View 1: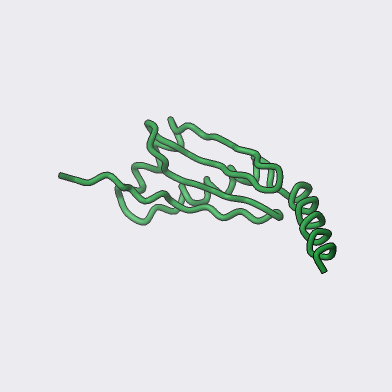
View 2: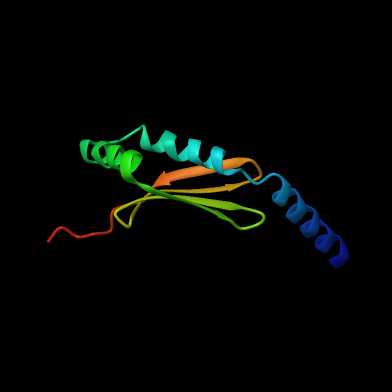
Length: 97
């Protein structure tokens, strides 16, 4: 039974390695989130991130992470594995007072 579980984990790891999304796929997912702002401030943030934002693609062998930051503040974070990409806006944790 343990051998079967170990074999399944190895197969899943190999499948994850070969089906991890590439940088272009992750960038498209992040751009889709940036192009759909929920408010005026998110719209302005999206324009700023599109023009002057920093983008980083991190490869973790069986998964990938893609971040868009503006002035060191994360705007969009994406995770991808098995040709699936999940992107979301990073909530602003700064307090206003």
